[in-house]
Length: 289
Ligand code: UTP
Image (tube, rainbow, N blue to C red):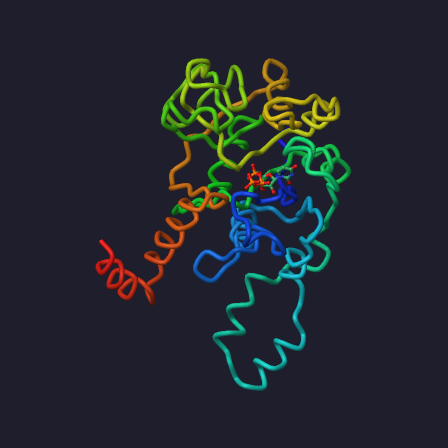
């Protein structure tokens, strides 16, 4: 029997060095794309895939991420008093069900694999999703919902994948590929940040995963991989052969918002999707190109 997917882990304990000085006192995941912080896009995408329980893996200086989903009594009372209905409505997506968000501290950022291991008590014996909020996906059907479809079809581990230029394989987790039907790709191996000459393909994992709980026991080995970090990719690679493991070529466009260019491009792409902004944005873009 395939267990229902209800849980998501949101690792947000990274240092965000590529975005300094903006991330000196603010979490990278609080940076807004148009008018919504990255963390809220991730939570809304997860909810659309049926996720009910969230665990944020946090570190120092990340309290705003949790507060963002709290009730803001004074703000809401003031907005009500002033009859600011639009502003009140805009707060709704930032409201979480009481008790649905829990946090754990990573304390030292030893790598993404270590961050996921920190959520081990939350994961328990259940399948769980992972969303890296700095990977933003613009899609008609939310990316995690596409992954959830594949999870319910295969009953195993699934990760979102996309083709990257061969010369960039050393930035990503790369797949070794078995059977490939164009959408679902059988994963026969995983390598974190291989040099282009060693990369078994140019299919890269993006920040969306649905994993079986057994990955935790491999992460617990605390083996250091690329960059001397505990890599999630290495833990996942251990599952191959033991469990089903597929990549999903999702439909949509992904923006790496942990990177300045990706973040700027996301602003434009998301603004152009907003009916109230599209004309103005097109207008000013014409002045620059
Ligand atoms: P990144 O590779 O983007 O690292 O992490 P980073 O520290 O956030 O940013 P840079 O590279 O220094 O600019 C990918 C995801 O994994 C989380 C990050 O918060 C981000 O969501 N992460 C990474 C942790 O939670 N803990 C870690 O030890 C490392």
